[in-house]
Length: 318
Image 1 (cartoon, one colour):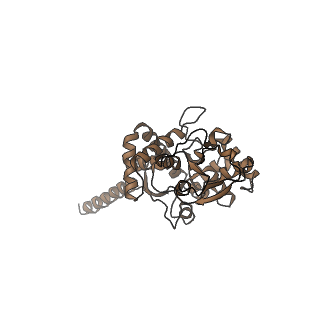
Image 2 (cartoon, helix red, strand yellow):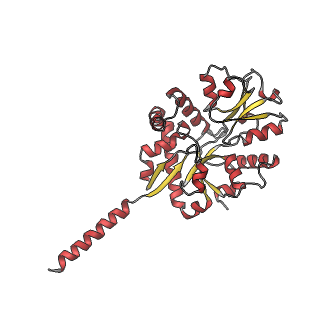
Image 3 (cartoon, rainbow, N blue to C red):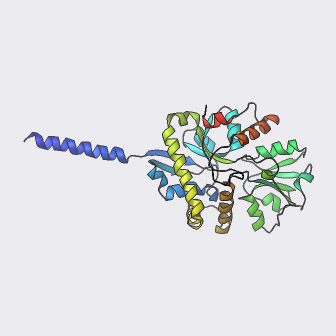
């Protein structure tokens, strides 16, 4: 009888420990490549709807800052995953940082060139064209060299001010972002003065989720769980656009981003449209080997890559 309280206490302790272990979730920091906006709606949805929690992951979404980019956070092991455009990821791999794509959201290229002179951008040889100072322009540089356009690239940070003020002849823009900023500023954009890369043989996929190969190999199940829950978030977003927009605006306001609901609504609609593969008509959430080959060949041809980056490298497939 004297042993009973001790046995009971030990049993209860063991039971509590088992419950604590079962309830424990792995901490995972995810950093999108840019500030809070509808471009990352699916991840916000997965967080707010509890999809990450259901998958057994304690996800923290941390946006990059002016002094610490998403990739720098990855390099410093402060984040486990980030979003990157395919061409960006290839460039980083070529620089010696092996990355693995765990989820592909974009199935189509969103980049355009918009001319402020109501001209076909391909007829503006030598034009001063805006390009992002933070990257994203690899494909555009390759295209301009291939087409013999001799553009003078003018760096800009975050918006369309150079274009509006007339300091440049044309600008690169994302169809879900700067394109709509120009529309909101009163510019009429049409088939004459807008060049869409996806319609001219440069349909290279863009946003996907990446992590280092080392982290992926050590945490494969966690990576798969995060990818699955994120996909679930995007699928929910496609089915519930208004509720998703509410969630996006929550993140926008918490991060003090200068934007508005109509702009984020347009962005969400376009991002979701770009997720549908042109050939299958489905949201496939997969990296396409043919687009990887196209991007790698172009970037190698114009010395933006020293070595070929293959589909197998990006996906860890044999």
